[in-house]
Amino acid sequence: MGFMSSINGCSRPRDAARALAFAAPLAIGVLVSSALPARADEAGVSFWLPGIYGSLASVPSVPGWSIGTFNYYTSVDAAKGVNFERGGAIEAGVNSRVDFQYFAPSYVFANPVLGGQASVSVASLVGNNATSIFGTLTGPGGATLSGSRSDSLFGVGDLYPAASLRWNQGVNNFSTYLTGDIPVGSYDSNRLANLGIGHGAIDFGGGYTYFNPQTGHEFSAVIGATYNFMNTATNYQNGVDAHLDWGVSQFLSPSVQVGAVGYVYDQITGDSGSGAKLGSFESRVIGIGPQIGYLFPAGDMQGYVNLKGYGEFDAHDRASGYNVWLTLSFSPKAPTSAKN
Image 1: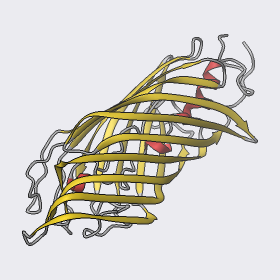
Image 2: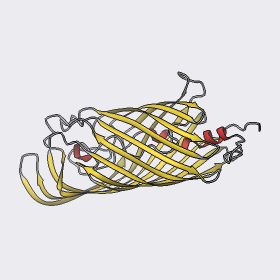
Image 3: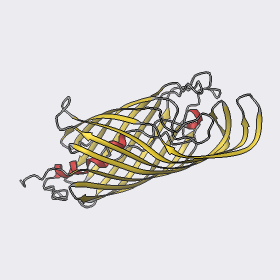
Image 4: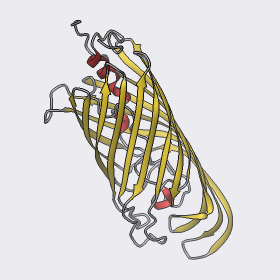
């Protein structure tokens, strides 16, 4: 039977895998980096949030309604020699602290679609963004100023609809997703701190998960790309971004999971538009860190909590630092199956 059997009322390893699947998590596959200053592209802000996917990313879930939420905290810096463009001004050096809470209800369909499991979700966030710049500043009119300034904002983010398909073939699991940004969040091109990105975006990709419930071994990877629409407030269009998120873990018991996570983010085409005064401004960054997860019963639902963190390196045209995620999700319990 393997150690994953009889987990919280699930008598088969595959039932246990499905009970754990929302840890992927499904709804958190909606991409929500709009609150992040100094991360990539215009003003250092990208649509994709590296690390949004992790372990069990492609494992099918239990049909029905689920809710996922996570708290995201990041601290990033860029030296005075690293410039960013925002609202027509050139800013030298950035220091940012972001803390937001993200919410994503989702629905998993019971009837197969193209032989796989279909799901839809929509998400947004509420939080705080505190950003400072320092060094020499070049204003929209070409005037050069010396000094620094700071800004902070508490508000709501854009809307992030998403759809996905997942397929299972024994220990192998496959997925594909489509998501995007509806720019309705708190955004002003003249502000340092924003909670929206000021333009629409479409992101798509696919993933793979190896998960053996008998041994508890797991590995996941999701790769995708983002197409950004023009920001009409600044006449700036971010280039195409490519990204890879991965997670590897071992279940030490039916409820406890430990492992590592990582990501690679790389802008593969340059920025454009009359507002792109810094040229192509192609950014990249790599992150890696530990994770721990715990599965628990929650009445008629299945609960899951996960803590993970990333340290960043090899950053180019991008501020870097660290980020910490605390995820909590609730999904339907897997049906109890008779023992073999």
